[in-house]
Length: 500
Ligand code: KIV
Ligand code: ZN
Image (cartoon, rainbow, N blue to C red; front, top):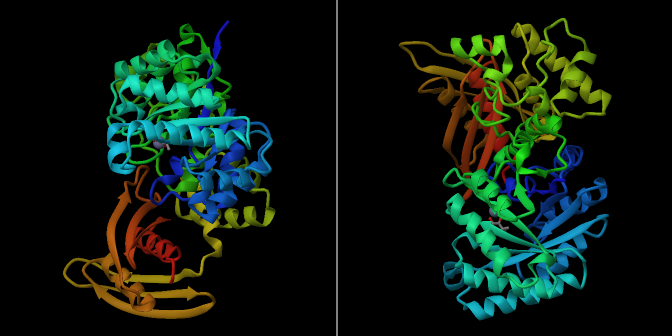
């Protein structure tokens, strides 16, 4: 008989805090539905007081999702809790996640307070939230650096006040696995009433120990884990859902099960990566492009003789389809639609599929084979349709021994603009021409070109960071022509500018 571990997914809250990864409500609903199909128990849908967009997303996800509990984050502040309660109005199962910093540095520098007052505020918040919902989770922010004796007092007090789940975040990713495990064990052994609540882990990956710490917490008594798809999240990210799910599946001896349908892991990973324009590192465990690729001769020889020699998991168990059909210019609309489904892209609107198919045919004319990555990019480009500024044409003359010259045509809300400029290289010339049309004081802060992996005809992907009016904006572009991809990434930023 195995124990059940609850999976609390915070891709749409902690994960979405990553700069440049913000999703709109429609995209968040798409992710939430995929998380439901994946089998997560709790979806942390947002921090409703933080913005009207977050409030709206929690509300719409509550309507769209049936089975998982929908959770909303708050500070230990009544107004936050009121707004969260309102946002959860339509949720079939709802949870408020409230809390406060408990480490000495948070108490002193963040709250200018003292330990006793923090306990009072924590208890008051939990009691207040319990007036509206039966399921209240309390987080002790920076619990990783909170001394165990005091943490036990906080946890005991909030359970007494009605907390059903107690979250022990290693907010800064500082703990060692042994230390974090001991912390959870200490709480199990020293908190009166601990059997009335579920202990939750919430580990950040600043030192690369998030998954190890989470596992150590589980082995010492935690029965909920807070995780994100692809491990995205603040700074170095959170614990990856896929890593915890597969560790428990591969190590049956641990005797702990989750409700995760692991065959949905890769489609979910790709959907999140595509919607957030956040590439997954190729060697990322479970979901990276190379996670199941054996390249050395010795490994290939072993795998061909018997896959068990070098493979501890079956790629099919994580939803990797090794019979992937290769799409070419001769592939039909149905094949494209099928492949999008495998990749977790669900588009019901036939008109949109037609549009993506047209773009697909154009790309397939330029390339021999259209890869899964290309399809994700094509589907992503379709989402950019409604933006005010778009690129009509771009022509660049460049070469050794003379200055590059670019001429550009833009469509801004239906009006046509043209400009030309010279520059120090093709990207510089194109961006200068773009700036002549846009005429705003914007500064390129970061420019990253993702390596072309599959031949010189592959799509080049560009991420840029642009500063405008004191704010940073993140943009993404993809094209077989890297200069066009660069300009499209810049235009992606411009479309996000908040004009005062
Ligand atoms: O890392 C953290 O401490 C958090 C809390 C708000 C739960 O994300
Ligand atoms: Zn966090």
